[in-house]
Length: 310
Image (tube, rainbow, N blue to C red; front, side, top):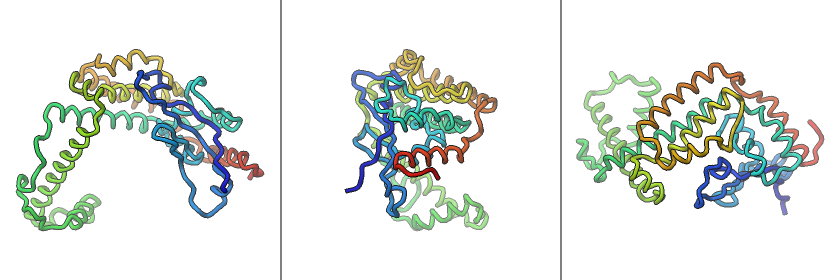
């Protein structure tokens, strides 16, 4: 039987680690594992992570290093949780935590702000559905298209790709084909909108749905949007990943709808501009020292497997 992977670090993560949990909140856990010898010396593929359940994930150490070096918010956060939330810290886990500053770089601008903006996009989409929900599935006839497409999806996709990458100029296509292409694009967009709307309706959390109906937007997404932007700013400005939030009371109030939708949009735009300025002036390097991180990963794996230094 294969040896089990070695757990070197595990921590509570998510709302409980942020100090934002409600009585109904799940307890999320994230861990770091080093696999048995064959994961690194054998030819068969090995898992990048093990999901014990929906709220309990353990990352293989190389995946953790890749994501942390890319400033992935979830992975960076687990290295900076409050010590009271860190449930397993072996000597190798201590070495990993001692070196965690090596992962910090100005990449945090794109990752933290990028995640926040994805939250904002969802908020705007859900607000549009709340205020003006689609009433029925779109039909091809509504877009001036025949019931059966005269041009295959593959052909349309190929033309769109060549137009985007410059291999094909619109002048080489007939006006009729361009008109059909435009109508097909608009129909597909409307179809995606309808399907996404249906999925949103089917999977909405009742508590969040009540908040959306009451305040006109998803206040939980808003809370995490603000948290991500503030954390990104703290990393770029101070080199600090502050997981247990000192502003937890305000963030909880945002989740409960203290801000209007317009206030949220104004705050998000202001914080995004501040993060951009902070990135320009940040003392952090543009990217981590990948060679140093590679040596650290090698050393931790070698130590776990009882191998000599490279």
